[in-house]
Image (cartoon, rainbow, N blue to C red):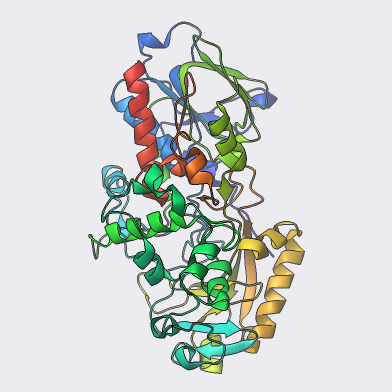
Length: 501
């Protein structure tokens, strides 16, 4: 019923005659390297590189490339068989249209991302909506009732009291209210970390309720299908204020940005193709130790690697599995142990017939039930009106429930509920792919989120260097969010290291 994408390393290696597979030894099976660059003398005898970067997502790759450009020898170590981390595109022969499992839209102000695409020859095409369809293409399923966008403002199940709120679809968080409450100065993307705003480091549910949004509206707009966290109780409104500020900042570049043609994963693959130092795939890390004059990185297969410094460019949810010596300061250790990661499960469907023509309703559907957001994806630039596949995009507590089920049972439960909610889907869909970010040991969730009190507790110390160990990843970004935040963090970590070398 489902397929996997474990051939990524093979496909990448085949594209470049500069690359070679390592032969011999069970410990090295499946790993491969780029040919070794000329070593900088500063690396020292017995060092594998001046810097070891752990994690080949956007943050790690950007840090590695920047360091190499400035003459630093770098080794990249990646636990999986591919590049990109949580930027992960499904192959077209598995699900048509190259749908994104992870990072989706590249904003117009994503300067680092767009520059990387240009620099490494990846073409950027139009934006590809995933969880927010184009206008007029959404149906709402509330308490088992199917409600059109036109009928929603006056519908009896609409819980909002304010007139402006009644016009707001349940598929969209109450951004207008967030914007009205946002205390940050305009265009100040660093305000969310400053102590003067600590009083707002409270739950979204508490703040929205105090602002007069009806309890049912808070749950509908911020609790169900939440883009961040598990529900409206464990997400800090400070994070949402920063999200709003960042979105308004991105609006300064209308009509720019989009998505990489062939999938966003083409960007980190192209970045990796331009590395000159060693790259180890299929090489999970077991321990990282600052030994005073060097850093030792021990792989799960027993190999030991050494460098003058290391960058940990992986989610903290993955770092929790790794022994880190010496132990970080209390606030930083709390961040590693406690930072939240958004639960996310996806079920992808092939479309056998146009169900929207059969029932005369919009093709996409937002639900308050297990399937979450059921989206008709239109990912073919040559046929922009054609539905290429469908996706049940499930966040929060529903995603956690599915995470504890085996693959067949999870697919069956989501699919049966879809058929119950909308009978026209029964003969129209075939499940073809399941992905659970929460079950991925190297991700632990789709992306980081900040729980109430966490920004005040450790946002300002989360990325501080720990001896010879540095940190990168979107969770350590200071100004930007998402992909651009990951790139920003890699840049910061590279600059930190240059100050020491």
